[in-house]
Amino acid sequence: MRIDIITVLPELLKSPFEASILKRAIEAHLVEVHFHNLRDYTSDNYKSVDDTQFGGGAGMVMMIEPIDKCISALKAKRTYDEVIYMTPDGDTLKQGMANHLSLKKNIIILCGHYKGVDQRVRDHFITREISIGDYVLSGGELAAAVLCDAIIRLIPGVLGNETSALTDSFQDNLLAPPIYTKPREYKGMKVPELLFSGNFPEIEKWREEQAYQITKEKRPDLLED
Ligand code: ADE
Image (cartoon, rainbow, N blue to C red; front, side, top):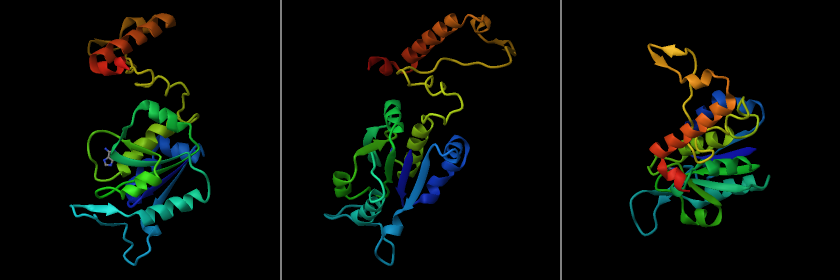
């Protein structure tokens, strides 16, 4: 998989890809992540990427030309499955969407800034608009990093234990069951006895029941879909 991220602040985005699982995925060539600074696609001396709104109103708007130039340069080299725009008014990111995107070959992610982008960018270049939640960030970069993390960890081979992504919370519209490790007892706090029984079908059944109960308690909305 290849991810091209278009941003005015590449330095804000890079560090999540330089540590831990994402770094290892890149080093193992399971994913390529490329950053494109929108200012490299500007045509004036000031390297302007934004301007005031037509019709008046507070806040600057990202201009269509540098975005078009950058997307066109990328599209001239390969075909893209999706051109995603990170925006608080997009579709809310859910596990199912991450699963779906993890199967794509090439995607572009455009990070918004200021008031947002000229509507013509959204109408003509963007295939999908994604929000990471109902709150406003100062730019799309942190949202793009969240999206990339959610996608990349699902690519086969990225997680050490192939099954571990499948047992994450949300994978069956259920939250994850409780987990325990050593010591068996800590300051009087005990691990459920069943987990030492060696009866794996019973343990599995217990985990499923726990996942259901926890979901019912914390996120009953997940059981409604
Ligand atoms: N840009 C600003 N806020 C955002 C959000 N909540 N999700 C995605 N992109 C954003």
